[in-house]
Amino acid sequence: QKEVEQNSGPLSVPEGAIASLNCTYSDRGSQSFFWYRQYSGKSPELIMFIYSNGDKEDGRFTAQLNKASQYVSLLIRDSQPSDSATYLCAVMSAGGTSYGKLTFGQGTILTVHP
Amino acid sequence: AAGVIQSPRHLIKEKRETATLKCYPIPRHDTVYWYQQGPGQDPQFLISFYEKMQSDKGSIPDRFSAQQFSDYHSELNMSSLELGDSALYFCASSLWGNSNQPQHFGDGTRLSIL
Image (cartoon, rainbow over all chains, first blue to last red; front, side):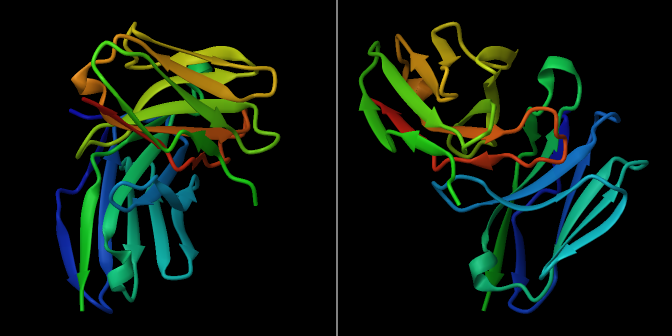
């Protein structure tokens, strides 16, 4: 079992809909969680990060964290075709010399069709 | 704002050759992370440095070595290159000790082994 698991894709939503991306992690001690967007052949681009239970909103994006369930999600409202990309969930190690290391999920491919 | 700079952007090598990838972190960042992303894969952590000392080591082959210099830039040295080393190599930087500090990635180096 991977340390970070994302919901299997690909995910296809119509333009204007809400896209929901999910991620679970195995290290209960993890403190910081990140969502990156990656276009093919490009570097990961930070979308959101969250470290407290609850919701965090930034424009059309909302990250949700539930540490008890070891679950983090990303909602994209009013999805646009330009949101079509691979979304990577990443969990940061907080312990010792592994501090700061990111462990990524396998990614979810999102397609927003007009 | 200044970002993480990687060079070269593209590199083509033949089997058994050597390659050196360079990473210049965001100014004042003291920690550098290297990741390898194979085709269709999520980024895998290779190695990290804090204040010029190796802080953590992941799935990095013994053929690879890296270091961080006094100006905080880092170099990843790869020898006896194999076809399986063809991948995108990303560098990220951050400030050590701040778990809420997200990592920002450079544009990456695409390494192709012929």
